[in-house]
Length: 206
Ligand SMILES: [Mn+2]
Image (cartoon, rainbow, N blue to C red; front, side, top):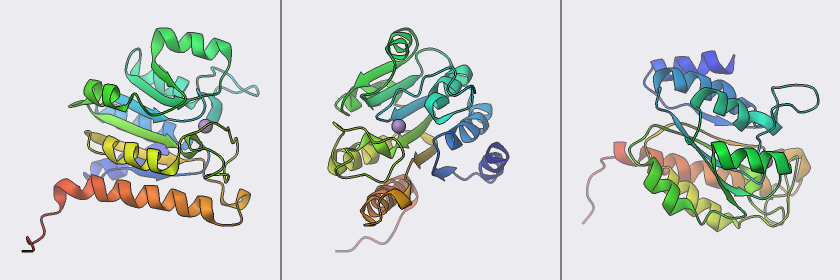
């Protein structure tokens, strides 16, 4: 269903921007976008590797969504930043197949240089932020980035040739203060503004 809907959005020459929810929603959109852009690359912010081939008896899971994306785009086309949790085997597998940078988003300039001019699907698992600023998520992982660090890197990433994107893993019920939802919406808003930038040609105010 997600793949078909993403295809409709692409057919209309629009940008699929997914919001979630379970990270697996990215896969349908990535499948649709990859059909249109065979040279697709992926920029992935997350606390977790998400490279498990199998988890709880299934190949389709939030713990393996990037592994399933790799099935589609192949070696050397996935940049993973902020990663601080995963199985030893996942980190070893990543050495051969993805560009994985641990703990923070400081590798952004390097990723930007490599991805410039390429069609990019940008997926942000909001749990890349520290749970002290973003507790409303299913698998919180301490030692994450600040809100400001994520916002700056997200805006920078939206300066690339983004052909599909998402922000995922907000679970509003897990943070009844509403602060996590506010953080997610602020990231969404700033990304939309940056993505719209090339299309906004308002009058110049003197
Ligand atoms: Mn995650």
